[in-house]
Length: 126
Figure 1 (cartoon, helix red, strand yellow):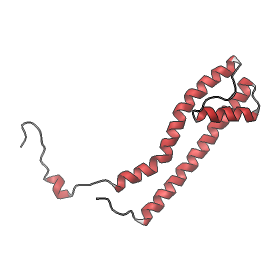
Figure 2: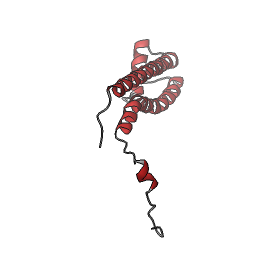
Figure 3: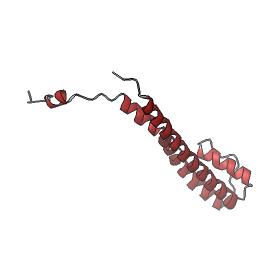
Figure 4: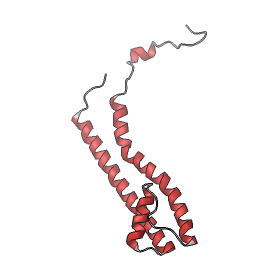
């Protein structure tokens, strides 16, 4: 049976969510910066177009501008591979405190008495 969470538990959860959201925001900003710089340098895109391309690739939507230079194409390959893993990792980091809170809230622990007197079940055991 799940218990009602203590207000302090909710404050801790909110603080952890805010901390992780700040971390994820900073890392996403850095990843978009890396992508925009790469598209600007390697494919000669204007900064706004480069940032748009980087953001669209990072979120899995696909490129907006066609990549034309060989160096730009190599950068786009590496950035797309990085983005696929990075975005899913950031979602996991963002949601980790909520999942942790959920698992603690609904964790059913056996009492000491039940765990000491539990008999193993299986073939040949009684």
